[in-house]
Length: 169
Image (cartoon, rainbow, N blue to C red):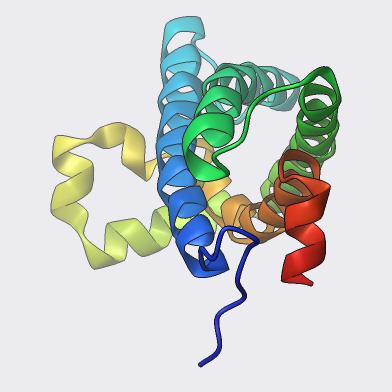
């Protein structure tokens, strides 16, 4: 298996692994904020606009942390106005994709299907953590399968130095 190399001789697979670790942390932060806001504000599946708002607020919290960690650790680069604007643009596109897919999956009943799957596979989980059995809790899961690889490509494009991108390509 060949590994793309950066100008510093570092493999792109290491960069993707760091992106994955940061992404898991950002995703967990996003989910905790989303779930916490839903619980705090009493938001459930009967209020789709409120779900979109709590999802977006959770995303914003995650975005801020993600930017700084992505710069320093994932892509090992310094910040600049252009990189900040590019990161914000890629995440604005990503946030729009998140909310659109969240609502598409809500309308399609994906949350209810996932809740049924969790209840069938592990009913004890719902006994101890009842919020896990709610469709709106599970709705973000299929969203992440689509947006994570898309986001990696966009963020990498905007945060990596152009010289580094040319040597990878």
